[in-house]
Length: 93
Image (cartoon, rainbow, N blue to C red):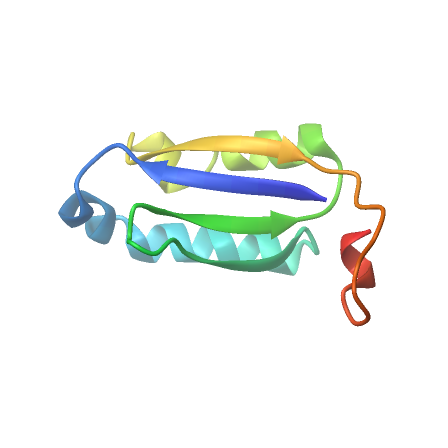
């Protein structure tokens, strides 16, 4: 499993300008079968995406996020080898 934690480095108004293209990019991640879950951080300082797949491919895809291209957010990418999961989330292991 890969955790993509993005943190805004621009103000929220800038993020809102690029939100639609970013959400299209997120949709593509789901279509490719990489993204399992995503959402905003609370408070709204960025977001988190739970992903699976080849780390190098996902890192290359992250570089195409409009939030990265337009310097809206930075990503912290963490790969985790899940050893124990609750019933119903086996895809994370």
